[in-house]
Length: 300
Image (cartoon, rainbow, N blue to C red):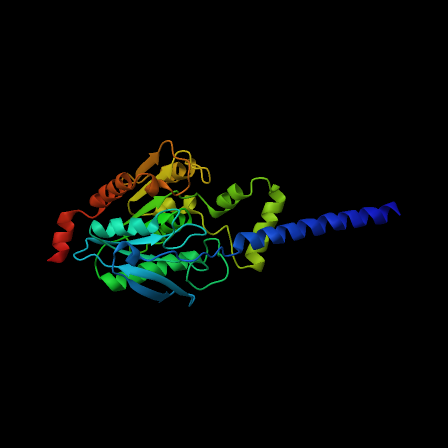
């Protein structure tokens, strides 16, 4: 009798862990889709609605804003649960500020977000294809003009990862990146027991085709053969500043720059806190990568 009870208790515990792990995996991969709030027209900018395909034949949507005589094209990649017009990060205003400073801007919604197709988050594995497709579109659209990726949070981690694969860009601005998707998910679920977390990651990989172990910028940043500007709030309450500092340390590229902002605690809110200072630092970094004399030679 006691043995039977113990068997049922054990089975109940196992069932509980399986259900809990499945719930976590489903939560990790569930697309948190929000509407795209506003357009560049709201800020007096002319833009073009764009649809483009990823390598796995998914339709993504974005917009292209042209700046006459542009010196480079900025590809903006939003954070987790964001859109190309994310209000919490001020992405529309950021795009306006780039255009005013002589840059084309191409921003888009990652799969499962905004107006792009897709029902699940790929936890970074599939989203790498989105960034690659966006850069390929910008290249086709702008010819030989230099391309820079400006990513936020997840977008920053994706930018570093695709840059390590030799994508056709000249620099990356990585605002509030994390070192790996597994580390980020752990930050989001600190009270989940380690064994349950590992089981949830396994379920995400097997059941939802979303492998959190794939997106690991910390392991590939040393292969990024271009300058990176790491930006992070010192008091970031979601992703600690140590993530960007560790990425910069692992890179060892003397062309990299690290800018940490004291007294700020919000994640990816650095632009909104001080737009003029933020833009000045970004443009100063771009000046080092795309000097005026290089543009003059290209124009000839």
